[in-house]
Image (cartoon, rainbow, N blue to C red; front, side, top):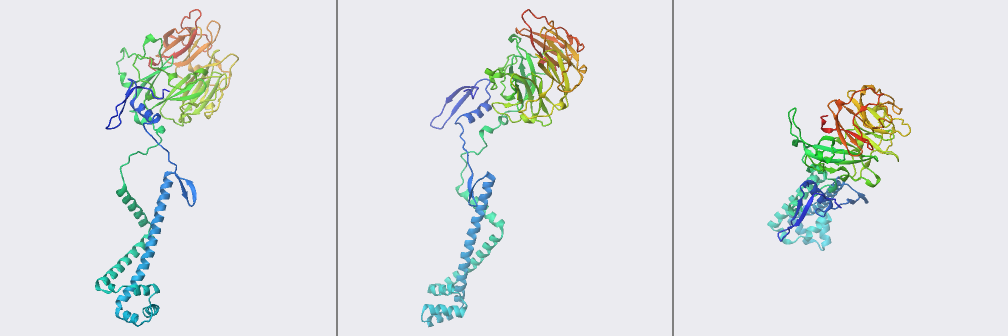
Length: 531
């Protein structure tokens, strides 16, 4: 089922001395992650649940650990109080008898004479009660006493027992009047049991193995994560990219022979996450340490192979966002092809599921095309296929829950659709727009006035049969470079500074010559260009 990847071979080296299983890993296998998966998906570690169901005050009650311990403590206190009460009663009964025997020893000759003068035991008992103010129990104890106890040694034993019993009675009464002493006895008895019967644990009590954070087993390290235009992702340690002087040759991040290029580059810790938004409105988590580590020139691994996408339904990743902390003061703004925009608190995406969660409810026939993290104070610009655009304050979008659809960002005409969403946090820079037939232009962001959300917008670029429809738009600066990708797979790299900066209501200039039967399919900013 490929639940555990990265294992090359498993050897059983068990012998009469004990069990030994050796797991050999592949070159790219991560030992700590594989070990965690072995614990989770194999009998390598067994776990069982415990239900703390107990009778409390005559009724069955489900307890947590703290409540169970509290009830056990109360039970032990009750046991000690009842036991001490019983011992006190027995000690007082014995002290009462010893007081009678002590009286007999002090008046031995007179008592012997009284007994000898009595005709029956009952007469002797009554005489003792009347003469010495004894109770019936004390008088009977004197009559039952053997003559050998009248010796000097036995007399000393009776007196010593009486003194000891009096001390015990005082101690029992003190225990019953002081809860602190009761708790001390509980502690002493538990310690005694531990010392007498305690053995080293053969098992370990831990939390749910499925809830173990793999991040706790991974060394935190900064990584360079690259995502290619064709959807391949990989990571390399930041230390691999050495600092160079200005004018250096640089380090290759992707082989040019693969007809692919780096579309996005992120610096992220192994403890960071990537939020991957699909065109169907679902969100998948991808942990940085789970991204395969590959050589500098290799493409890495296809992103679709790392996420449970529904390929049969045409699901694909539309946007990738790195995140470290799910700050409730930040938001994720999303846009769909039909002009719907939505803003949701970043904190709402902090509890992922392996199968993904709903980030936005995308209507049938629509697709999510973009997502970005904002601080709630930015402007949002939507660019459409027919050359229109609208810029409005992000504050015009109220925060919504994950399962909400969103609100209208731009009013589209027939056959028009949104092709790009741009987050504008400052008015510097320009908006680069390119068309299907290889035309494009740059326009200062200042020329796009802020409007009310939901309007038709203003002209961004004039689309004609000559230039074709708009295929993409993004914010750029002079040092940037972009890649233009043709439908046939042809790729050309151009410097942004070579593209003229002109007004909105123009059709732009030719950026590349398109061969007959081909057209421009997409545009992406080159992540290696220094921005």
